Length: 129
Image (cartoon, rainbow, N blue to C red; front, side, top):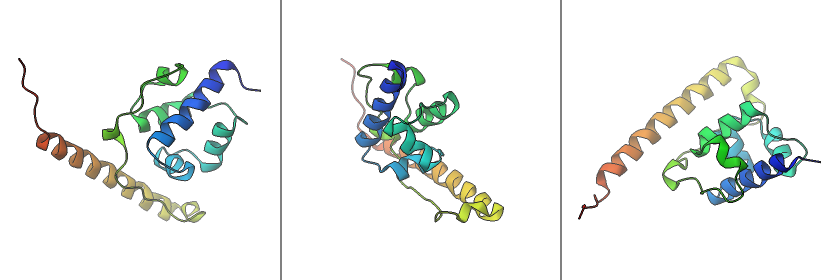
């Protein structure tokens, strides 16, 4: 049985993932958490270790503390991934494939940052009164 804090983390993990309309697999891979661990976190079989919670909070663009809140703010849509890339199951066991996938992920993150910056420049600016 999960502690009260672990249960709140579990519920917010589901809430954040569903808010971004991601599958468990997509969220796990984008946050660089093993898929089977993600399933166990959401199902309540395991609590989320601090290191994994840090990766997940970075992915969603929220603080670790937000996972402990009853009704935390939802992650900003601007942080939602634009592109998700993954290798087929088991392919990343080969070190060359794993290295290649890591390089692709880095390129995708860079592209998404550039895309968000360009989008922010195009957004109408609010005037101060």
